[in-house]
Structure formats: C-alpha cells, structure tokens
Image (cartoon, rainbow, N blue to C red):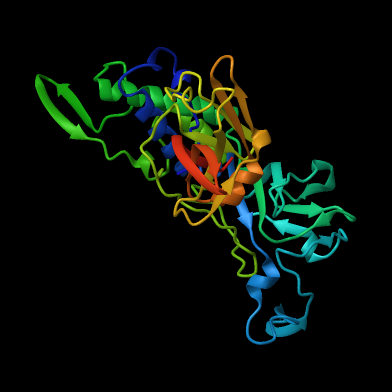
Length: 370
C-alpha cells in the first residue's frame, strides 16, 4: 500500500469529521491504488545512506587492487583505486564514482546530500538524471562512501484519481454509519411480483473487472487501467546497489515533550531552553559559581559520546535561563543515522584536575530521516 493517502480526511466535505473518516480515506486510497495497477503512489520523502560501492563488492586477498566486474556474462577482477570513506576524490563527471543511482524511483527532487562528515553538498554541484541518478559535476570534491541523501520520489495522483478517492471514501463512511444514502451496490436485492416477494443475490461481476459499480470511479479506472493490470511491470537488476533503510529502536528514556529533541536532516541544528521545562539550574549557575554547564550526546548503547563546545551553550544569569544548540554534525557523530540516543546537561567543576559532574536534565535525541 502507498504511504500517502489519495484523499485526506479534511477533504471529505460533510464527512470530514465522522467516526469512520480516517478509515474510509485509508481504505479508499488502498483500493484505488491496487485497482489502478499500483501506479500512483504519491510523493514519499526518505533519507538513505549509500556506502562505498567498490569496497562492498571487493572480495578475497586482491580486494586492495581489484574489484569484480560483470562483463559479457562473466566476472573479472579489474584493477581499481583503493579509496574508502577516509579518502576524498575529485569528481570527473563521467566515471561510475561520480554518480549514485537512488533506490526509490521515479525521483522527483533532491532535497539534501550530506558527505561523510555531515556537511551539505552545494546543490549547484550535482543534478538529477533520468529521475533516478544523481550526477556529480566535474571538479567537485566528492567521496562516494557513507553519503546521506534525502530525496522525494513517487508518482503523484491525478485530479481524477483524487475525486474518485473522495467519492469512494464518502460512500464507505456512509456504509459503515448505516446511512441510507450510501450508493455502494449491495449483493442482496428484494423483488416483489404479483404479491410474491423474494430475494436474489447479485454476483457482482464488475468486481472481477476491477470496478466498483460507481460511474465516476469506474470511469477513472477504465482510463488509467483499461487492461485490468494488477501491478506495474518491473525490471530487476542484480547489479544495482541497494540503499539501507532501518527501523530504529524506541527512545531510550521515558518520552517527555519538554526534554526530547528530534533533529531533521533538512535543517542544520536544534535548540533546547530551560524556560518552562521544570529544570532548576539556579543552584549551580549563579554568576560567581565554580560550576560550568556541559552537554554530552550519547548513542543508544552508550558506547559513543560527544561533548558540545562551550560556544553552543548560552547562560542568561539575569533570567536564570540556559540554552544550548545541537548542530547536525555533532548529533550524527554521536548517534549515527539509525537509532535514537540521549542528551544530558551537567554542572561540571574541577578540583585537583578531577572533574565532578552533577546531572541536571536529560532527554531523548533522534535524527529524523527527512
């Protein structure tokens, strides 16, 4: 099923706020997506990480000088450069190392590309080819390893499809609410002739033809799927690299709206302020205090930690308030791109070169994948 609804609940007119509105929109979207040949998925935004293709394909003791290449149906070990995620190349604009074929297709737009250090690549240094491939322009510093790409892909739903989905969703909402105005065809038909009443069952052959029995909906389906195809044809290539998508772990700490932070890949940083959070900092950060604030980011397993620079933390002694900002690069270095982690605010002091830490506040920290 597509991840996007063909029709939103608020677009259903008088039936926008009924008990069955959301379910009706979901069912109508799913049915019309399937009955139209699964063509119109809507736009989906994803963030994917592409690792070093050559390094992944190498094997055996010759992996530093050769890479297996499929040629004429046979596999040959071809001499290759020995770059990895710590190397930096300059794109020539022509070689396979200068382009990346994305997993989701057709690609409609590239939102951001981040290199191995989390820096955003200048949009003028690349372009999209054939709705599927990112081409890096010649002369651009570039490493095709651990590249993080946020992009949108999918086929938008035509206006006729949206109107058909709206009609079908409304009829389902009417059906489930017991509304007599429902126009969906029923199998049971009562007939009365010459004083004799009896019931017949309609075999509803239109269902076998991927139709609904409603004119405006079936008109759309007949135009976009005249041959009753069950799905779009696909070509599968074993040579196309596949990006990794993950299902992240749940937050490590108990969820708290005042302390949990989610950093989007589309922005450069996220900030937190103690105002209104309930965190009491007055005992540790008066202007003459020996304590200094310290913020530490940790990954889910607490095996990696990153400390924010002092320039990222701002103390307002007059209002007894503390703010800090987490740059994307720091969060990515601490957490990675998959699982959530935590942030912790400490009051830090030193005595005889030994650091003493008092925990003041903490929360979950996560990188949102778009």
